[in-house]
Image (cartoon, rainbow, N blue to C red; front, side, top):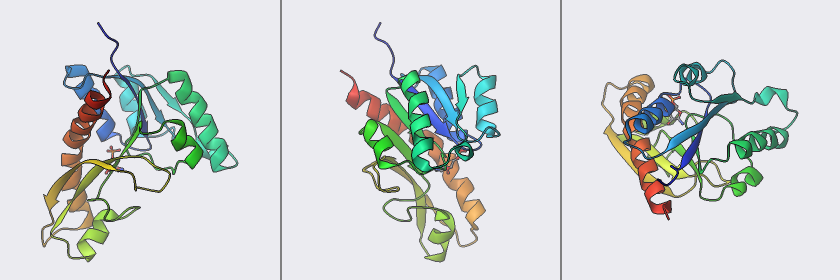
Length: 194
Ligand code: GRF
């Protein structure tokens, strides 16, 4: 049987998207294996969760490096050792430099909690509410050197309610992000299959 495509998932926090992807891999819904879950924060809840599932984990603490290039280079070394087919950013709160991104062209994905090209960057839900948007959502896109700017692979839309706060809207969006990321990964893996 052909080897399944492998994923390296990069996280900085709770890792709920990572866990949804892990569940889809375990059930066979997603034809992939997770080679590594890597965080820039040792205390990321997602690292503990991945450990408890027996998924290999690693931490590269950005604070231990004098520059972004030095951090990127350490990250690159760890990832090259795991040799993933896809690098999956899932709440990874570091900006990756152009050299890093160009090492894996069209093989790095990110999930962003807005309907890109609207609201790249932070505080997306607050910005959607302040703008009076009727809809918000999330996007999975290919990573390019410009922040949150690569081609969008798939999106999910949710209504913005008049009573929404950034937190209630974030909750409604994250509930949809998990299925979105699995769906987008399926699409990428199928397109790339020999
Ligand atoms: C998600 O909202 C994702 O869109 C953004 O960071 C958050 C990560 O959440 N990039 P989790 O760690 O996957 O729970």
